[in-house]
Image: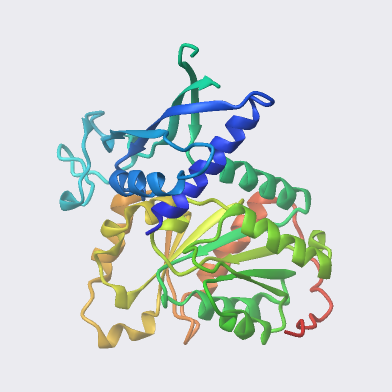
Length: 118
Length: 242
């Protein structure tokens, strides 16, 4: 379950963010993430490992809010946006062209953090 | 109680890893070496590919290997037998190498030789088609291996890995006479998720396809360092005593 490693990576990134506020210690309420469909991350599993990982840490009680982002491509032949899917081999339905341009779906982004100072 | 604040961050979830990866890449650039990240499922033939490539390229390039393995040093021992510097990185539970593990390996390597003498640094990742695709280690090029016994559908089932690769090596082609596999279909599946990568067919057993594979390596090295001329190989590597 590599979401454990993803959670660790997320915690490391949040730790960097926290250091930017030093010497103040932010109390985090919610971390908003965007998770693309064309990544190796399963949102439900990420929330599960998040809840386990933050216990008794500086992030205790913080909620992870995940906004899924669909995979969208654009057919480079006719410029039509489309939703690539494995059953069609990720090809464009209009011209049956390979998935060349990806418009969205690769996001693994910490969009924002809601917090207060204790 | 203060009003809640909101910081808009817009950082990649893997930002901390990304920062370390960029730091690694800056070091590689300062040393004028080309770093390649080899990735595949377990048993696709990364170590066998390396054994042949290291032997054949030893006269042309100065090379070293950072060898990721979850629990053992078996692969590192195989590669050390070729006479190339190998630093084993045991990842424990982690199913991929990350940028800080590679930084740790670089420090061990730098204790033993001057990395600026190297032309190529190979990173053999942990066998896994999922996680290594998301964790950059500072490499200049990603090479994904897919063996003919794994089936034609793998590029569609693990699309992120194949999308990320700069070069896909279809390995173990000496087994083709014994298999029912449609190579055109397999290659077309790779190109459907990644029309940009180079796709090559190789066999580490027979050496088939290695001229093209090594040609690709030379091309990448030349693209990185215009006018590059291969340096003399390092003095013989003395394996560490374990």
